[in-house]
Length: 217
Image (cartoon, rainbow, N blue to C red):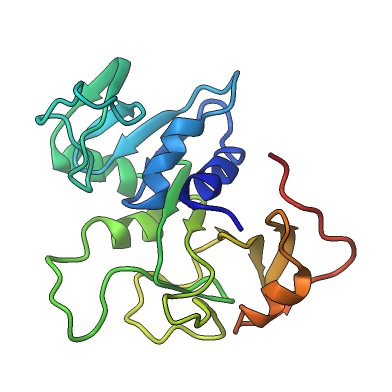
């Protein structure tokens, strides 16, 4: 199965030249470390950064330069910093072509739950609801199952929703899945993972037709 970096590296293959991309906290932030050669993308952070680069090397961190998850980041030449209202005008104005988010649950119709677990105190929903309501394309980066081994790819989300019918693709430690009207369509398997293992780990509707290739490195 893939580790966190493997998931991010596979998602980076979805990037297209000239895109503006928002990366959520957690696994999505790692995507910035794996931009394919020949591709020029601009990473946007909703706290007010455009032109975000990879994580800094140890000892080179700037405590005043952080992403929305309060992690220290770098900026590429030509990058810019601006206020939150400008950042969300960019998001709500649909000027971001791709959003990559983590999730606690995803339903097979594209619903996503990623901001609250009942009974646990949270500071707020952050920018997630604006992002899922406005992004042209949403990819979720997540583990296929939770710590108890239960599927996080469901027929219907059980946690409070962040967005409805908005997710287009899910990349997990086990598989790449497109979300269609028929449910999760299996496109690729992680190296060494069988279709049967993916079926057993997926509670939602899963379509696995034809030869399902392993992910390319």
